[in-house]
Structures are given as structure tokens and as C-alpha cells.
Length: 257
Image (cartoon, rainbow, N blue to C red; front, top):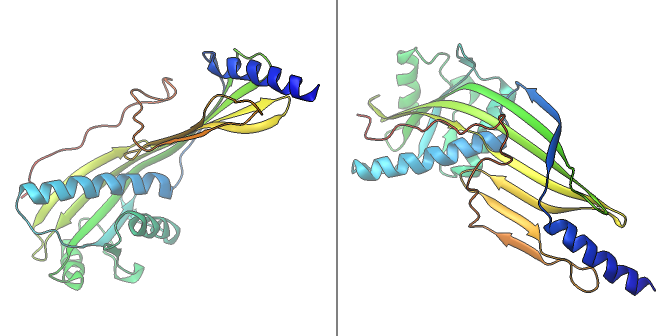
């Protein structure tokens, strides 16, 4: 009897999962806070990719990066100790040969070129020196519910960070070799299903410069799922397609001598 119920439930649940979702937003929470490692590492990932391409195009050597100045806010001030730790974690995650100078050695202003030059000299001739200015950071959490359900309720939890950073990289003489503003909006989307048999996650998406998707295939006999992992996943549009989600601004290209 239990086996028949399980097979019947599996067939019904499989049909439910394959039905198109009708999403209704029940809550949107916006907050302005320090950026997280998730967003900052995504920005640094794009920075490294663009910087490497520009160095190759300009036939310049690819040297390690030393961050000699780190600033935050619309009117730039020195990053707090907690934000510096987030920057250090992001740098370590994305750029193993890059580093951030100790807090006491960082430049105190993006306009103090004397201190920036001294900091660059400390970085040495075997390294490029860089300043980073996080000018805007905000977080958005969106909770949705699927109105098209039979034996279950499907929720969608979307967590999105928006971040805008200005990067300036110089050589040991203080000459700028790369200047760019990078805007990123990494998103994590999780779909948990609440069924008569309990709750579990059926889909996970990470939409960043290096996106991925993990989901479960249709239920098979015995009510088992097959895990599907796709590193090459590319989302064709915003997820979910709500007005809260806007595409980031494109950065500049070309040699910055």
C-alpha cells in the first residue's frame, strides 16, 4: 500500500515540478550595508580577467597586485577594519598572488598622491600597486511563492548584492596602467519545495561572472532524485525577471596609459 502511494505521489509531484511556475512576490527587503565577500570577490574576478586581457593587449608584464589604498562611500573614506577583512578575504579567494597592505600602511586618501607613491614604493618594483574605492553597495532579498501548485508549495528565495567599485592600478613609477569602474550584481536563487513528505531544495542558481546551476531531475521509482550539476550554465536574462533586477553597467576597455 505504501509503495503504491509513493509511486502515485512521485508521479503527481513530478508533474507538479514540470508545471510552469506563477511567481508572486510576497516580500522585498532592501538594505544598504557593507559589501559581502560574495559581491566583492565577483568584482575582483572581473577585474582580474579584464586587467589580464589589457596587459596582454598592451604587451606588458603580468605582475602581482598590491592594494595600497582602500576606500568606501560616496565621499571616499578609509575602509573600516571589518570591511578591510572582507577585502582581504575576497583578494585571497580570487587573486592568490595579490595582497593588501597592513591597515597602518594604507594611504589615507585617494587624492594624497605623495602617500600613494610612498605606498607604491613599499610594494616594490616587482608588483603593481592598486587603489580600490567601493562607491555603492546594497543588498536585496526577495521572497516569492508559486501560485501554481498541487500537492506542494514552491518558494523562491532570491538574494542579490549590488556593488560598484572604482579601480586604479599603477606601476612602480606611479604611472596609471589600468583605470576602470566595475559594477556587479551577483544573485543567488534557491527554490525549496514544501511537500506532504517534508521540505527540500530542488534548485540552486548562482548568477555571477562564473555562474552555475544545481538542480534535481524528475522523481524516479522509489522517490529518488538525480542530482544535476552544470558549470556551463548561462542564464539568458535576469532571474527572476522583476523590475528590482537591472543589468550592471559595462566597464571601459582599452589601454589606460
